[in-house]
Amino acid sequence: MNRPAREHGGEDVQVPRAEFRSYYGRPILKAPVWKHDVPAYLFTGGLAAGSALLAAGADLTGRPNTRRAARLAALGALGASTYFLINDLGRPERFHHMLRVAKPTSPMSVGTWLLSAFGGAASLAATTEARHRGWTARAGRAAGLGAAALAPGLATYTAVLVADTAAPSWHAARADLPFAFAGSALASGAAVGLIAAPVREGGPARTLAVAGVALEVAATHRIETGLGLLGEPYRTGKAGRLLRAARALNLAGAAGAVLGRRSRVLSALSGAALLAGSLATRFGVFEAGVASTKDPKYVVEPQRG
Amino acid sequence: MTVEQPPRRMGFFTDTSVCIGCKACEVACKEWNAVPADGLDLLGMSFDNTGQLDANSWRHVAFIEQTLPSSADPDDPHAPGDMRWLMMSDVCKHCTHAACLDVCPTGSLMRTEFDTVIVQADICNGCGYCVSACPYGVIARREGDGRVWKCTLCYDRIGDGLQPACATACPTQSIQYGPLDELRERAQVRLEQLDRPEARLYGHDPDDGVGGQGAFFLLLDEPEVYGLPPAPVASTRDLPQMWKRAGLAALTMAAAVAVSFLGRKP
Image 1: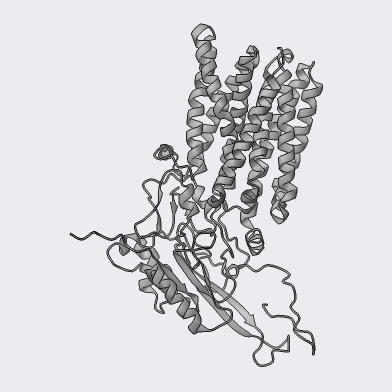
Image 2: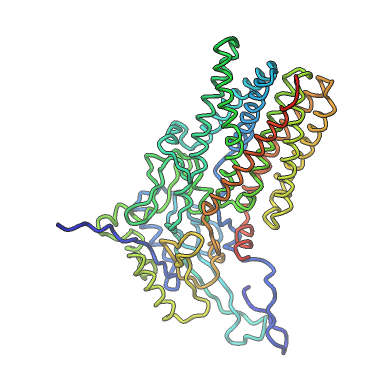
């Protein structure tokens, strides 16, 4: 099995190792214990961030329908995020133990505090929609701007969260994942505008949809093609299918956003495609990282160099 | 008045060249730490029916059966080969730079006065981040319990001057417990004394990707043969770079939003 091959009567011939060695082919790493809640949160967290940014822009430029829809979407996505995060814990009743410490070395701790602060601001902004006049409108604007200031951090820290692990394909993608998640969050936020606001308000959402898709597609392309062996989990299996679907949905959504500037129906359809694309991106990235922990070759070969 | 000195860094040196695969370490660990049984599972991997380190196995004895070139006729590829049996008792590495501890968002994972890494079970909320962060696949979440568990280097024994249960039970001194600097010297001497080309130390180097392991090994083949990563790195080493990229991406987002709204009338 480990015998160096020898040619008859000749000198030693070192046969290049055809396959790396392992312990009965078993994984070296533990697969993440995270279930579908975590990729679902990657999506809803991005959606909350993207919506908050859209809402702030709409508020400052006098687009009341977009503002209202985006603030409510941010609130809904925030609620879903909180649910997913707590539901994924092994001891959900101890969720508040996250608030015992603030640890810059733990992206999850940073995210907990980011999400808490963002949650307060975004909830307040959405609540003021119940009576949008006078001082409540002003409070809503202040809260909405606060949420928007935190939103880019909320959308991108999740990339650090998954990259700061031993999962080979996540860690290797650390330079590009934040851009993929940033684009995905922008596109999903833009989708809220495309779906819920009248076409006359939709100009910025269309631009944002195109920018978000461009960022997301470029970053995922770099991840799929630029990581050598560790890009393989992004191109194959379930992750590969999800990421191919994500690209198709995103490109269709961006095209629809541009072409549908006079059509309410086409705009809403492109919004739905963008949401589905963002969701597929998050699940695709998640599945790729999980797959890379299950085959020891993704651990051994890169470490052997 | 005497000033109390902090305790020295304690650790394990596991010398696999004298391991006989008796699994006394596994049993002693389970007994002392009251680690639950996880059922009978015949894995078909030599004598290893434990499989891996996990929430319910804090020592794991690996068995590797290898066929070597026949000593009778090394030139004949069809001659029956000699058999070699590698055994190795694996354990949490108690890293100098422990990724599990770095990423823990509750402060449940902590470093002790002996420079070991332990989980505080009353704090852990089972977020599972440490499970994905460990480059050795050691720490794991217990089914039905929801919290993570791993070797404590018998924190409740060593504080009283006792040895960890596994080291106490080991009949061949394959598992040696002591101050880490002494263990490193002893391992170097053992490596020279053994004088076998395939022998190597694993995890003893303070300049490696985890800053050196508090529990290190003498191996008789490449680490991956034992199910160990050849050159593990604590992912938090790259954290500053990762936050920088995230910051850049966040700025890109903000710029994209500004550009999309600027100069447009509703």
